Image (cartoon, rainbow, N blue to C red; front, side, top):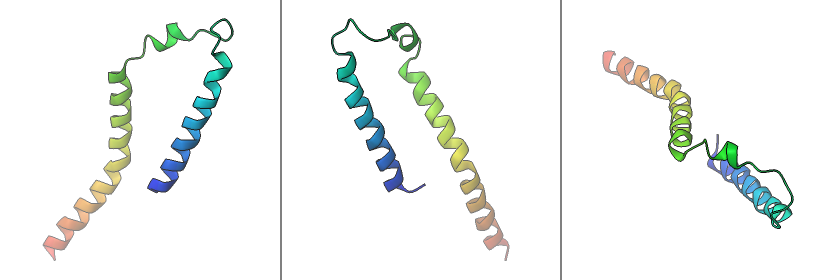
Length: 74
């Protein structure tokens, strides 16, 4: 995945989140997600993202390693 695509998707998500915040700014309206978000900590999120990144990188690293070993054998 290209970096530019990631940046575009991230900027769209951030702008959507920023635009959605004023809808619940008065505090009286809108659902309360505090019970859901309080059970999720940053360490769990970072661990999940690192695991996904590792799984995505594994085939590329294996392919690179295979090619490197095969070039040494020639």
